[in-house]
Image (tube, rainbow, N blue to C red; front, side, top):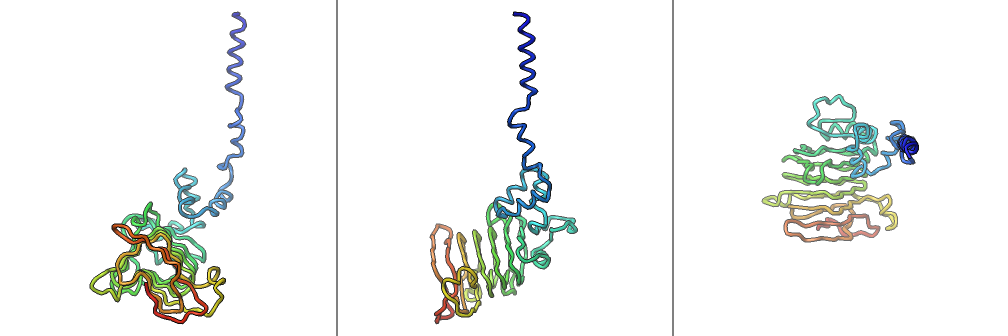
Length: 269
């Protein structure tokens, strides 16, 4: 009986040192990929929330997920503006961007914007948990905060116009998702409008409008102030309007798209 005891202890030690099935699979762990492969995988993730969430996993993932190859960042608190891909304001980030880039705008405080023209396809996203966390303020004397002349997407942002419009849509496909648009209500309602579209397009078939036509597409967006939620002066028509009334605000879902037989102009909501 005493001779069996050392053998049992030896078996226990051997079981502890024997590699488990889980540890044997560690060689195929995603962290064993090189930085280029891992960054390529991150590029397929939606910027918000998936790619943004990868940045909080570890220091390496933070570096790769925030790499300027994946998106540009606007952060007023960064002192070293020589860091690649980081800019002190939205205007310089837009100027340095390439078509198809995503610009992540830091939460906290407010970002001053005025008549910033965007002539290439871009995606502007607020980095906060809520759209209230990232605010773009358009000062008086400006026609708009952002002037869109290409296909663009805005998400998780608050855009506030002290006088004028929040977004001026010239052409392209503008998508506004999960944002807050704020305008003054009094005393100059006729000068305040959250969205203004002046897009005019050639006649196209209705089936083509969703794929490549000009338009404004709004979802889960709160619109405050102004006499109208959207004002169009081109040949775009308001379609598929859905409004949900809450105690403090109205939530809008609507599309402004091309119509091949559109006759009326100056449509407004």
